Length: 135
Length: 160
Image (cartoon, rainbow over all chains, first blue to last red; front, side, top):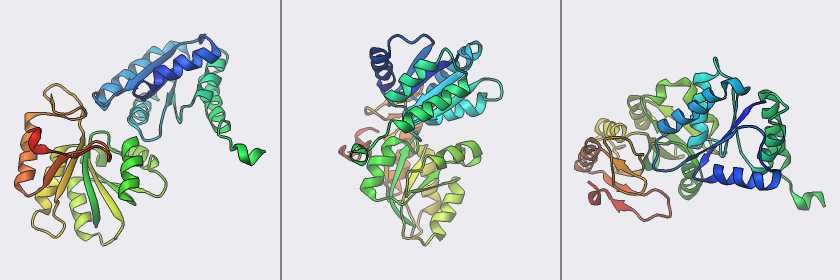
C-alpha cells in the first residue's frame, strides 16, 4: 500500500486523475493532485509536496509522479525527496502518462512503494509503441 | 563566449526553456548563474540530468560566470539563465566596459511572493527588483519581458 501524488504543470494532474478514474474506476487508495501555475513559486510547491509526503508516512509512503523531467514539479519533487528520504518513504518518477497512472492505481493497494515505482516505470516504457514498426 | 540570449526565470531550466527557446535559439549550452544553486550539489545534479539532448548545462556563481564568460572562446550558442534579477545586475556590473558586456535581458518568469506586485501574467516584481531593472537600463541593457518565444516583447519601461 502507498499513496500516490501527481505533480504537474497546470491542471494536468487533476485531468489525469479524472480521466484515469473514467477508465479504471475510483482508486482504492489515496491519490492527491497538485498543479503548478505560473503564479505560484517553487517554494510554495515544495511545501505542498512535503505535506503530502508527511501525510503518507503511515500509508506506506508516497509515490510522486511528475509530468516532465526538469520542470518545476519535478525539480521540487526532487528537492522534497532529497530533504525527506532519510526519514520518510518517498519515490519520484517523471514522465507521467495515463497508462502509467492506471497501472499504478491498479497495484496501489497490493504492492509496496518500491514495487509500485517499478510498475510505473515499466508501464510508461511499454506504452511507447511505434505502430508502423510492429505491422 | 557566444551568448545569444540572457533570461531571468525563477524556474530555471523548465519545459518552456527546454523546448521553445532552445529550438528557436538553436542553443548548445545553458549557463545558470546563481550563487545559491552553485553551492547546492544536489540541485546541480538534478538540473544537469534534466538537460535536453544536445544541450549542456553548466552552473556558476556570479563571479565564476563572469570569469567564464570573459575567457571562454567557444562559438557554441549559449543562453545565460538567472534565477534572480540581482544576479543579472551583479554580472552586468562586473562585465561592464569589457567586450563581453551584457546588452539585453529578458525577464521571463518571476513568481508571486509577499512584497511583489503583479506586472504581467507571469511576472511579479518588488520595488527593489524594479530598482534593479532601472540600474540595468542605466548601464545600457535593454530589459524586456517575454515569457514564450511566440509572445511579443514588452519593454520594461511599461512595468516599472
